[in-house]
Amino acid sequence: MALTIPKSLSMTMLISIFCIITSLTRINARKHPDFNLGDEKKTHLRLYFHHVGSGPDPTAVQIASAQSSANSPTKFGIVLMIDEPLTVGPDIRSMPVGRAEGIYGSASKDEVALVMAFNIVFDQGTYNGSTLALLGRNCIYSTGAREMPVVGGTGKFRFARGYDLLKTYSFNTTSGDAVVEHNVFIVHY
Ligand SMILES: *[C@@H]1O[C@H](CO)[C@@H](O)[C@H](O)[C@H]1NC(C)=O
Ligand SMILES: *[C@@H]1O[C@H](CO)[C@@H](O)[C@H](O)[C@H]1NC(C)=O
Image 1 (cartoon, protein in one colour):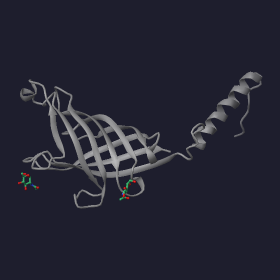
Image 2: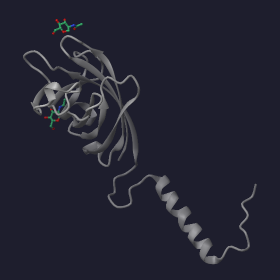
Image 3: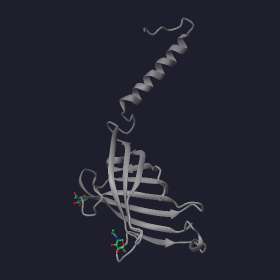
Image 4: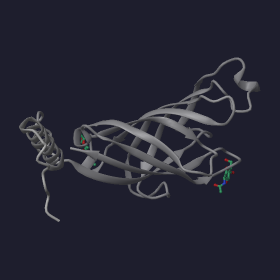
């Protein structure tokens, strides 16, 4: 079907329609107009986080708590600092990718929900030296979808935005140690 322009459309309206189409084309070209960053890219990363809360070399340590945290069923108010190794597979001996460094806090009085603010720091391969910044909510015992926003990045991940879908791969109820699978979907330059 041919595109017909109603006769009632004024020249001004035609010009503004043309401008809208022009700006849409610019977005579709996926080049950042100001920073000369090249083409926008989509990347999916699957990473395994190794959470070790016990033993002689923990990757997560409690740094603060409220007086009432001990009596809270959700440990509301405790804060952990984390530096967890990341690998390409669930086995800790699989290829290393980098580290997750950041802070987890128990932020809900009703369910175990963490506020997590951390950087994924790549120290291998193509992404060596680049980082991704994540900030979000994680209901660690939820069987449903757990999702956190990717809020930024550096190096190969400048202007990164996206989301991270997580699920617990394994959890040792005695030690509290866990392996968590993260699927990170990002758009970046
Ligand atoms: C990652 O980059 C650092 C700093 O440039 C360098 O020292 C290190 O050898 C690199 N590591 C790998 C595995 O390429
Ligand atoms: C779970 O943790 C306990 C205590 O650290 C340890 O003895 C046990 O071997 C672990 N289980 C598995 C399956 O790794």
